[in-house]
Image 1 (cartoon, rainbow, N blue to C red):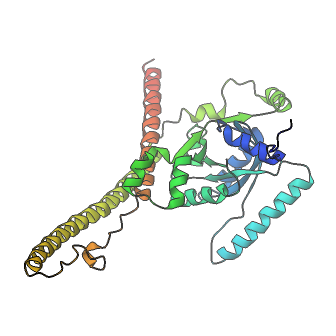
Image 2 (cartoon, one colour):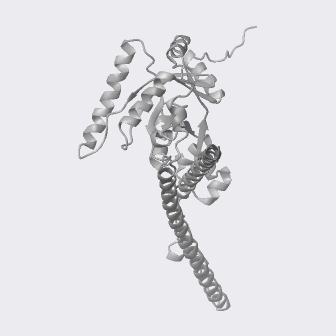
Image 3 (cartoon, rainbow, N blue to C red):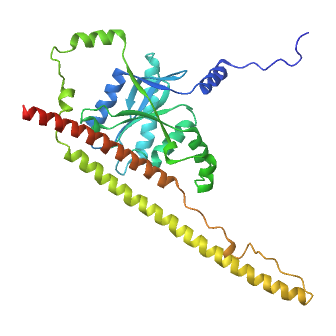
Amino acid sequence: MADANPPPLRSFAQAAQTEVDAVALRVVQIDGLVALKIIKHCKECMPALVTGQLLGLDIGSILEVTNCFPFPSRGGDEEDELDTDGANYQLEMMRCLREVNIDNNTVGWYQSTYMGSFQTVELIETFMNYQENIKRCVCIIYDPLRSSQGVLALKALKLSESFMELYRTQTFSGEKLREKNLSWKNIFEEIPVKISNSALVSSLMTELEPEAPATQCDFDRLVLSTNPFMEKNLEFLIECMDDLSMEQQKFQYYYRNLSRQQAQQQAWQQKRRTENAARRAAGEEPLPEEEPNNPIFKTLPEPSRLDSYLITNQISNYCSQVNGFAAQSFSKMYLMDAFHEE
């Protein structure tokens, strides 16, 4: 006998979306040409910070980035006009790419950064705007100054699911953070990046590879000048420590006011209990022990902990950069000392 209530048929798009949601994103695979485009755009526009669109395919646990294009530069009094022109520019670029049969599916965006200072509220808001239409978007962060030290400073980031749920409510109180078990480490998730090239490109690069065993990148790693990079990192680290101290002062001020308010409430309630005891003795109706209209019973708004979380995250990033760069610098110094002794 046939089932009287057959299951509803799902479209291919719904089935594909369900499969994508079930598989966690594990790798961001970037074409070598796309990586070169990002590096070229970010280096040419230094010290200005630039952004661009990432295009590609979302396949299972791998997000393939197969193309990209830069966004128009912002600035000046024409910022509103640039926003409109930028949106039209993106639509026109997508249309042109579709006409020449190139992947035109948006998978995120890339942006340059200076000394790793990218963990801001603006980055989170951009993520949330992308998340409305693209569930598994990523942001490629490239640091030209860090890359000049002989390291490819290219990383892929996404927001954690628990943080996005909390950000939609715009409630970053201590109680909510404890309830979600969310710490400053759980805001961003770094996805491993894999640079991929086709077989033809790999064979061509093999033929073009010079016979010299060392490349310019190898020589960059031997540069002993560490003062500028370390100095800037420490300057930014001190600024972040000052910002974190200011955030802590906000919370101290809030808890002082909260303690003062609780003391006033207790004194008022004690006075009201004494008054009610006298009214009961006189045979009168007692008065309520709480009055919502009284200013001392008004709930004090707790400061958001989002800024302090982001600052703490940024401090951790600067400390990691200083630690990694200092270790490399010591290795170079010991190496050169051995050469000098010989």
